Length: 149
Image (cartoon, rainbow, N blue to C red; front, side, top):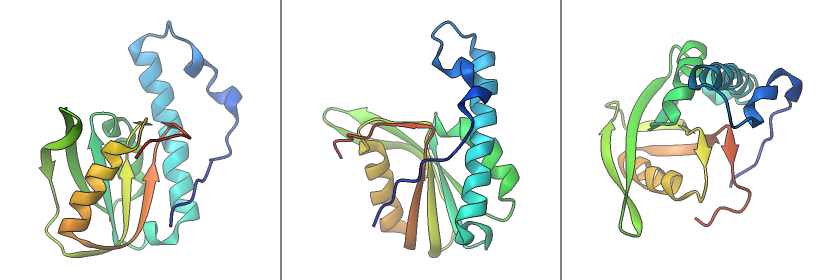
């Protein structure tokens, strides 16, 4: 079962996110601030994330922008790194680094932008083949409401 949680935040705190002429450093700073809001929301809303029985899967490259806020907020969580690349009409794992453990109660996927959902679906398939997971949470700053996956 999947649920869409839209995080309540004051859009006036992030007015520059809609501008196309931003310097990369300014954009990174704003994304960093927004990812802290996201990490705090996950921490406060999902108890399993605080219990040390969660796996956080950072989807490279975009997920790296979210990683500092989540790492700081969840010091006892295990982290995995996964890079997915496009190959013909599907996605394949290009790089991965996984913790050595069999079971997690919660898997959290971090990706900055979700378009079709196919990357998340690919990563989830790998996670399911490696671990027994009870619940899944996908965290993103921007996503399509009409994903194709």
